[in-house]
Every structure is written in structure tokens, then in C-alpha cells.
Length: 129
Image (cartoon, rainbow, N blue to C red; front, side, top):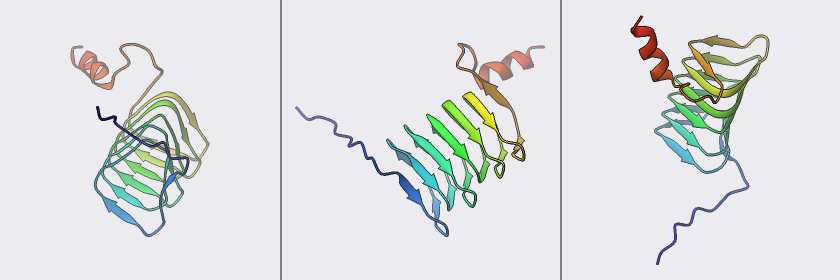
């Protein structure tokens, strides 16, 4: 019988400055972005967007720290931290949210890991009024 082997890397994935990736990224570990990504990111670890980093797409992860720019949706199961230099244009869904003074956020936010706290459910309730 074959076993699915997914090695757990202790080293973070790094997208350096001056690097642009068009496409989706999926990782079991942490990832740091100092370049540009046009696509979706799905991480079972932490996503860090450096001050020069930029993402156009959706991000799904356990924890995230943003110092750069995000245009799209972000869904974080635990803690999302928006640093003073961060710029987010899109919807946020997170368990906990930390926003430093100076951070810019345009969109909607659903916070807390409560049953029924789903963006699609919230919007459908609003439309019935």
C-alpha cells in the first residue's frame, strides 16, 4: 500500500523582491512574500507579506502578517495582523484581528470562529431584508 508522504519543511518558502509569480501557490508550511503574486495562496502555516510584497488574489491560511498590499479576499483561521504599512482592499474573514494604527483596510470583515459566521450566509441575510 502506498502512503501519501508530505514532508514537513522547517524552512519557510520565500518569494523575493523583484520576483513575480502568476498562478496559484499551495504549501504545507510558512511562506513569505516580498515580491508579487497574481493568484491564490493556500497555506497550512503562516503567510507573511513583506512591506514591498503584493498579492492580487485570495489567501487561505492559519495565520497571516501583512505589511504590504493585498487586493482580494483573505481567510485566516487564527490570527491576522495588519501592520502600519499594510493596505488591504477586499474582504477579511478571521478568528482574531490585530490592526496597527496606519494600516489601510477597505472591504468587509467577519471575525470570530462562531458557527454561522460565513460571508455568504451574512450576505444572504442582508439581501432578505
